[in-house]
Image 1 (tube, rainbow, N blue to C red):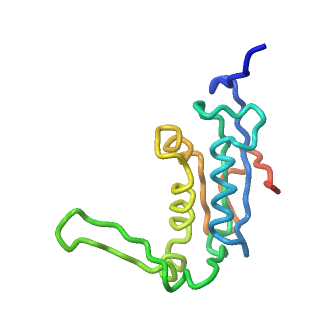
Image 2: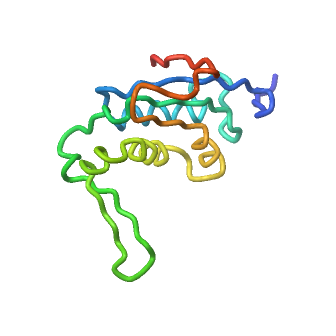
Length: 142
């Protein structure tokens, strides 16, 4: 008997909706990363992209625990001398909560081509409305 290896062509991808309202940002991102990777499936194969599509709604209502709103910063560098840009998470969550959620999910995915491809299947929305009703997404309760 040989080990089953999933093939990307034969997989059926489902759509899941995760509601981030009143849930910690990191826990929501961890669940989303696991679904994007396909780890919830019994036929999960590490070297094959067997993940699903994920829609995260109510990103603006996600909470940060502890003192992260004031002490945590998003930093990036322009490449020039003195080009460090930083923004506090209190400002980031007020202005661009969907970007903060995408950053959290991106950090939990593998840093290779499978992780990059998985991130394209993530859709994050600020409010409760989303544009993927035609795909018949299922609410994820896990």
